[in-house]
Structures are given as C-alpha cells and as structure tokens.
Amino acid sequence: SEKAWHHRKSYIESWWRPNITNGYLLLDVPPKGDLLPWSSNSPPYRISDDVPKLVNETKHVDATVLRLVHGIMEVFREGHEGVRWLVMGDDDSIFFVDNMVDILAHYDHTKYYYFGGHSEFILSNYWYSFNQGFGGAGFILSYPLAKALARDMMSCLKRYAYLNAADRTTMTCIADIGVNLSPLQGIHQIDLRGDLSGFLSSHPKSLLMSLHHFDMVDPIFPFMDRAQSIFHLQNAAKYDQSRMLQQTICHHRSKSWTFSVSWGYSVHIYEKIMPRSWIQRPIETFKPWQNSPNPPRYMFDVRSTSRDPCEAPHIFFFKSVEKTPKNEIVTTYSRAWPRGIGNCSFTGNYSAEYVSEIHVYSPSTKRIQIDRCECCDIVHKDGSNKAEIKYRECKEDEIIA
Image (cartoon, rainbow, N blue to C red; front, side, top):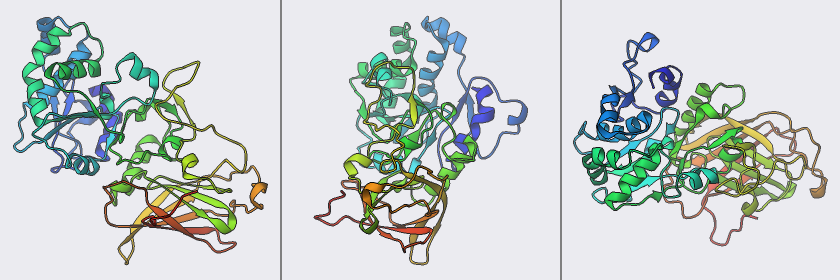
C-alpha cells in the first residue's frame, strides 16, 4: 500500500538493483508526499487496476484478496521479452536474487512450475494449506504457468469469489491448471515474532532466497533499527549470496570449544564439544506467530534457550566484510555482550569470555551445489581476544562431532 511504502521502501531498496532487476511495485493509489519525486532506487511502480470494478464483476467477498491475486496478471501483461520466471512478494520482504537465479537455472522454465515456501508456524499451514506457497516471502511461477494463470484469472476469481485468503486463492487457481506446489527451503515466510537470531543462526542447508515479515520481528542486529539491519545484512550478500546464513561448524579440540558460523550474520562459541546434529537445531529465541498452547508449534526442530554455561553460546554478530589479496572473503564478527554466566566446568574451565572478535575466511567462489556442508579449522593463540576460522571442504572421513 502507498501508506506502508513510506517506511517499507528501505526493505526493497536494500536488494533492488536499478536498471538490472526487472519488476514493478503495485500500489493501491498514486504516490504522494515525501514519495515524490519517485526514488530512482525503488522499483518502477504501477497502480493496481480498478478494484471496485473488479469486485463488482467477480462478486468477490474480499477486495484486498482480489487485488493481490489479480496483480499476478497485471505484472504478466507487462510482457518483458525473454522472461522465464515471475516472482510475486510483499513489500516487507527482502530477496536474494542471485540465489534465486542460481536455483531456477536448474529447472526448465518452459515447463509448469510453482515454487514457494511453507509457513514456519505449523498451524498456519494447517489453517490455510500445506500445499500453498506463502506469498509474502515470495512464490515463483514459470512463464507458461504464469501465462495460463493470467488467461484464467477472471474466471478463477469468479469461481472462488468466496475465498478470503490471497495465497490460498492463488494455490487453488493453479491447482485447477493441473500444477502443485514444489516447496523450496530457502523461502522464509517468517511467521515468527520477537528475536529472530536463533532462527537465522541455524539456517537449513539450502540457498537463502527470501526473508519476510520484517515489520513483525525485532531488528536482526543489535544497536540498529530494522532498515539499518537489512542494509547491513545485504553488505555481506554483495560479496557472496551463496553462503548467506549457511551454517558451518567446527571444533577447537584443545579447549573443547565448538564454533558455529552463520555466514554473514553470526558466530556462536560453545564451551563444550557439541555435535552438528545438536547445533543445527535453532535456539528458540523467537516466539510463535500466534499463541499455541501445545507443541508442535514449528515446522522444524528447536532447542530451548539455556543458562547452563556448557550449553549457552557466546554470541558474535557480523561487523564487516572485505576481500583479501589472496582472493578470499573475510567476514568479521564482534561480541554482542558478555555472556556473564561463568565457565563450563565440565570441560576444564576454558572460558571463551575474553574472545571479542572472530575473523572468518571463506573462498570467493560461489557454493551453489550444497550436498554437504563446508568444514573449517580454528586458529587461536592462548590469551588472544581474536580467533580465526578458515573454511575448507570436508574430508571424506570427517565427522563433525
């Protein structure tokens, strides 16, 4: 909406590339006030078709639902030459377009494909459908499917004029064409609330494509607002989208420390050797989308926050990124705050409290085929407040435990 765009445009401008990215912002009414003159860093806009007229023609029960679904046809009819895929998403989302392109390159765009993501909140999938792509985070249609959907748009809106959910309507119209959802793990609806750090620090082993609902969660970096946080995250993405949030785990055996890196976002140090099977489960720093008295609440495993010094991590957040003369990428992470709960006595009292900065060295080459995670080595001198982590491919017989 024009009203929301005043504070949401920074979300889109963080990843939009003027004169490179092809697309449009669909506004409900013409822009005014501080939106004029229109920013060259924003997508070009279009005004949605006459919604009252369309409601009258289709007898639809929900004007907003009709506008959202009809927007698919409005974008399709713009007719850029050579278009292979059409992506729809919300204005409080960020997208990682390079990763999208690399994933979609594995599929035949002349076939019928409907890609999207589930909700993280299990009841949302139950209430709406486990077969729909939740549209805020973005769903992707191959060109032939978008063409077929655009052709049937008005008929479908009349058939399902009683549906009051846009994503469910889109799924239903697509199902009538004979196509079903192909879920992708890197598309994140973020039907979560509060502190998202636990989720972002344990991303599934798949390329990150989108993050939605930034208005509904806390800023993802400490001491920054939401807009600053998103631009900060995109600073890392400019160097290597393929590793964004990818979790890499390694051990410093002499001190019994475990390092968990979420590339471009955070590093955790545990004062105990922890297996990857445990660390890959997100810490439940966040809350569910809605109150749910009994589990399961999420579509993934979680572990509870802990005050046990052997289980609670020291937390470091992304600070900066640069390329080295050796053509490596080095990301730097600084301690967020003192952990302040004592040492893990179980493993010999090797405190990591004095470590304040971590440098992570990774190859500059993309890593698109993720059949196995990367491994890493720790370089740390006794008493130093800095540690280095160097990425490498895992050895054939290497076990991360």
